[in-house]
Image (cartoon, rainbow over all chains, first blue to last red; front, side, top):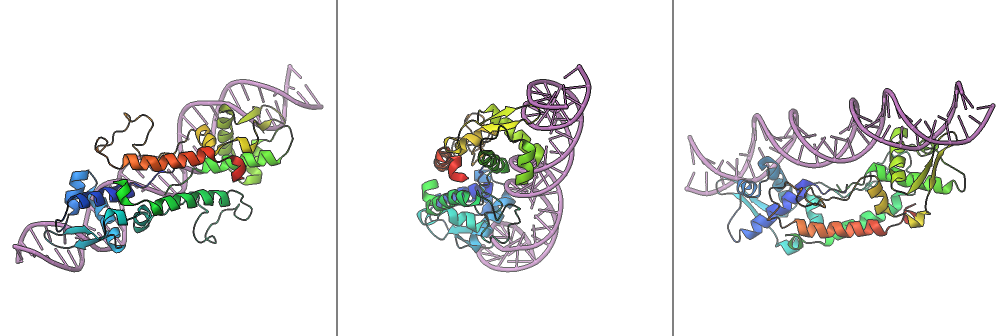
Length: 135
Length: 135
DNA sequence: CATATATCCGACTAAAATTATCGTATATCT
DNA sequence: AGATATACGATAATTTTAGTCGGATATATG
């Protein structure tokens, strides 16, 4: 219960790997996936998502790969979760747009609000935790 | 991501329902499942687990059902999670017995410790949140 | 004591979410 | 031109969670 997505772990490993590669031009997905034992295709997709969200920058072609846009202490865990298109959602009804929920108990539910508060706390924790702290 | 099990929600609804039924002798699974729109068989199983863990007491036979052993302010969220045989486990490697994990990165993993700390915080939150606060 | 009611419990099935893979296109360096 | 590497949508496999089924046991009541 309350599992974190593997994609998030992989993203963190990748950022750590790139960071520790120092000032080299680029680090390729292949190098990271080989070194960290992460499925190539999956990691590739994760990297692409992080590019779109401005966490890393890509370089096509021979000797291409990725570089970090910021140092790990300026990248937040919540940012990575968001970049991967994930979100912390403890219950089906705790979506941002409450009209979307089709829960039969929606109107009278006594649980949503308190669980929402717990979720908020976890969100806050994620938004304040830097990748630096994690790697 | 970080979803809470439906079983936990159902357990909370059931406890609330029994509590609000006042001093009646017993409340049956059927009554709760009908009123709260919870699958009967599933809720039955949940109730049985809570009996085994001393959260509620069962009464067999006609007019049987369940009663609370404690008031909601003396039942903790973590207790329910435990009773249902669930646990908060953010990553595969964060099991209580670390020798069980077969993660290839186990020895050198830099993530486990910090994620473990986040998990500890959430566990603490669960262990200190009473059902009273939730319902 | 027979019957109806309700819990008990393990095994099984279904559904959903997550993880992983595949094929093809695009960009860039030499 | 050829090799290398990212981009991206679609699909497959796996895992986890949710829900179902069948038969057993216990108890109140007529």
